[in-house]
Amino acid sequence: IIPIELFQREIYTRLYLAIILVNKGYDVLICDQLNPKIFNFRKAVVFYKDHAHWSLNYYKKLKKNGMKIVAHDAEGLIIDNPNFYRSGRVSADVIELIDGILCWGDKQKEIINSVRSCQKIHIAGDLRFDVARQFSAHCSPSPDNKYLGKHVLINTRFSYTNPLSNNDIKASFIRLGYLKDKEDIERFTEIVNNDYLIQEEFYRLIRILSNNDFKVTIRPHPAENEIKYKELFGDSVVIDKHRSINSQIAEADFVVHDGCTTAIEARAQGKIVLGLRPPLVGCSYDNYANQFSTENFDDAKALARFINSYKIEMNPLQSTRYPNKEFRKDIANFGEGTKFFTDVFLEVISNFDLNGYHTNSFPNRYDFKDFVKKFLFRSRCFLPEKYARKSRFFSEFKLYQGKYPEIDVSLLEGYCNEISRYTGINIDELVINKLNSKAFMLKKGK
Image (tube, rainbow, N blue to C red; front, side, top):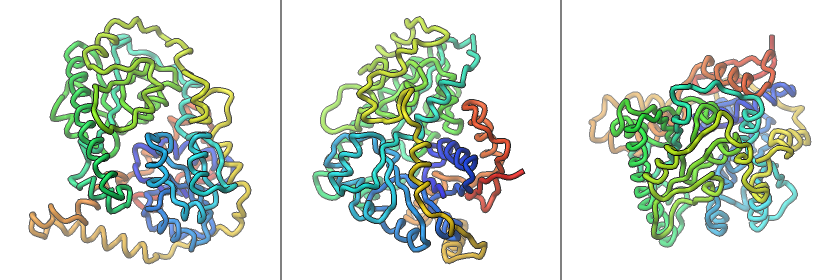
């Protein structure tokens, strides 16, 4: 079972993992993280995206159904402060409860072990770099001659300053326990204020490039409001957060980012990666990923000049792909010759007894709760507009729907076909069955 929070950010790598699992004889359920179908299963394996204290109750519910749980922190690499990471994203109670932890590399393992040392921690890397390496080995896209050297992919991550919903992010983090005291709140406030400065520098860059015959594609973070970019730039840019990031990277000549893990994926695919961050004062969003940039800039004009004068070749120098062997301590599967994340995952779950796995099709209490939530949300049009707009329930449910929308089988089939085409993985026997608008079962079939 693979529960997903952010559909666009996670679905591609999760489908890649699912296809490999199906080819090994497993059935795989992919769905949103609160889908009631999860709780119709017994004695299965759940692969989830964090081991933070806010997931403890979620894991307890899964354990009541006899689940084996493997956790992998999707943001485990972005560690700007080990102490902050320990207190915010590593729960000793969760570690005690679950059955396996997959780490990005040795550094993350050391931090987790400092909270609770155990034998269930395994070095694996991240699925994104399995996919990036496969794309690099199998993908040779035909360049668009009109934009050769002129196609710039800009990855933004401004979910604090351009959020998908009107929710107070700071208040949400306080409720989750991510911000525990006055010092945490002050630190987070500085990060948000600095994000506004970085965001403005990105706006300047986009204006410069779009006004100078560059093809600009903006890929907003899944939790960002893409309407803002449409209002600012209109038809002068392409705004696309729906296609797979790997195919977007493959088609771009340059990838621009700030502190974004997509930059590391692009570097693993052999692309020219450029970081942009103006001078800042105080705490800021971690710039770890900027170490993977081919070049970093603090000024939009300087970055634009670099792109304009760069003599890009049909195949960028392969030396740009692996910047430093030391990074393998952070990302175990970053470069060629290292073990794939999927291999480690299969080794871990092979030790679980899954013979008792079974399911039932009868509605459960989570089905009832889901029905009530959807009914209340759809009835908001009958309520006073002021109440509906300010209600936390309605705003949070709308945000949740935005993170994982209702989809159709054809969308997943399209992703699977692309994954097969660019990685060489066989999907001839793959069957996808729709259980509800957000839950899909992948298995072998005719």
